[in-house]
Image 1 (tube, rainbow, N blue to C red):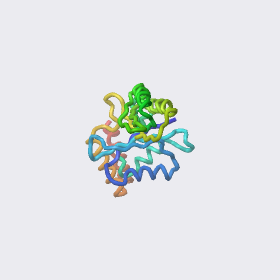
Image 2: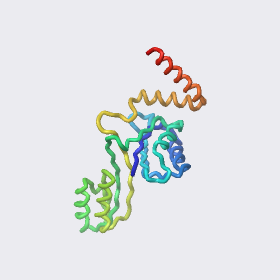
Image 3: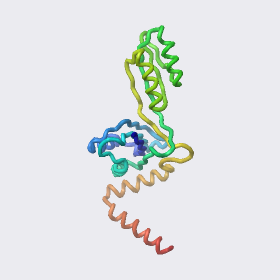
Image 4: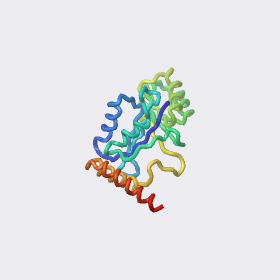
Length: 204
């Protein structure tokens, strides 16, 4: 069963390599990985899809290990939350001038479109769910698929709910976490939090 994780990370060189290395070291296969900038230029967003059926894969441990990386701001598993997920595919199909109309008709059924035409081929662009893209591929395969590339899943929670809160909260978490990890202050941090909780308990 596919599990979708969203991670916000600092927009810095080498972050993607650190995340990919984490999965490699634990021998987990990434089904899909998409990285791009967010509305905040200092933050990038990763959408990671893994197969929960992999032997030894514990999604909660994956979340915890990702969060330990210095440049990772936050990680959320949105698999069981209402979300919109999309994939993008470019498909090059072998098509003579007589076959272009057929390819175009098939693409339009799935709200795809032809974006490039060559003497002996066309390129179809389609965005949608994985099942939608796979269905179009099945219909185009008898005609002749020459090449295909997929961008990978991107996902967003539905409604007004945001996965990670406001930009100010994200950046605050980043600064606090980076300072704690780089200065090896975890014991002091947890001790301080314990003192605060004890103080609040006494106040009640």
